Length: 223
Image (cartoon, rainbow, N blue to C red):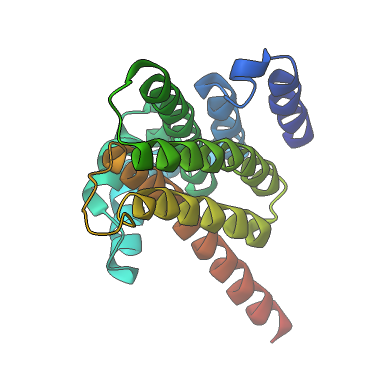
């Protein structure tokens, strides 16, 4: 069933037109989350439902406690907007966060393109920065798709590397506007860059939690 879901997602992406091929639908991600949830035995359903009701708050709090840059508020509000998150486990939450990050990045690409084509009064330095951001976000979307694939294959270390790369890209985009000599140039993408960083950080934190749990399990089995 897991392999079927992976093929469904990548088949879906390969059939999309060029301008939207990077977007993975919430329906596809929901199917993945359903897989992670439905593999739980039926007799444990009521227990898991009770646990799942608080998994978002618990996960976001744990991640926030481990990082001073992690936003607990953005974590909880973002995940709670997706209904399936309330019946997802850790893997499901990470996939939802990556889907939200993909949506953010896709929308930001459109914003950048609109700024470049419809605003003739842009500062020339800002134009250069926006073109850099356009490339960073284009590459970032491809990297996020790779991260989803790695995560579905339980290659959490690889997924974490790619998620970190996308977070760095959002920082690079934001910092580029501050490099104009003798002037502080406001970034028109501050909110978008921040949200992308935070959404990737949710998935990254979950990946670290899963990796830590796997390591502890192997150590206990060895003893």
